[in-house]
Amino acid sequence: MAEAQQFCTFFLDGHYFGVEVEKVQEVRMYQELTPVPLAPPVLKGLINLRGQIVSAIDLRCRLEFPERDNSELPMNVVVRTEDGVVALLVDEIGDVLEFKEESFEPLPETLGGVARDLVTGVYKLKDSLMLILDTEKAIHVVASNGRNHEKRKQ
Image: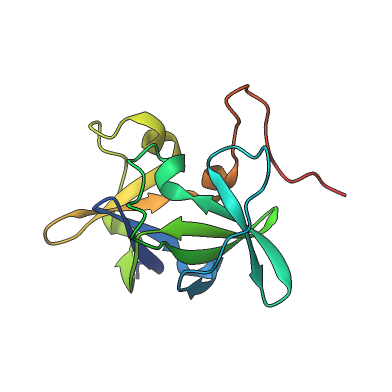
């Protein structure tokens, strides 16, 4: 019997994405961000999550999609990573969906740009594809000068 995997889904610039449910800590409505001076544009700021300070990565910026309209507030998909908890800023939250492993497919050849490096594969839906985001790769932000802006281990 094939294993089934569940995904927390969300929308970004009209694209449908999924993250493995076991990596998601919680999903939250918009929360005020505290800007971080000299941070790369992808790091939109910090949020206070019940006393825990969490970095907020704008996935639109990370995937080089057009900026979100100022009237639209992002939602947070808070994920657990090797480096700790990080909030991914997305346009809209979807449902939790379950797929059998055998329906997983490699990246389509037409997928290019940064998304090609951050997406591990796809699942076919009735009218679209769900892109599976690699959260570990998505949170590692590189500044325009080439230096990594990753959390330092203490």
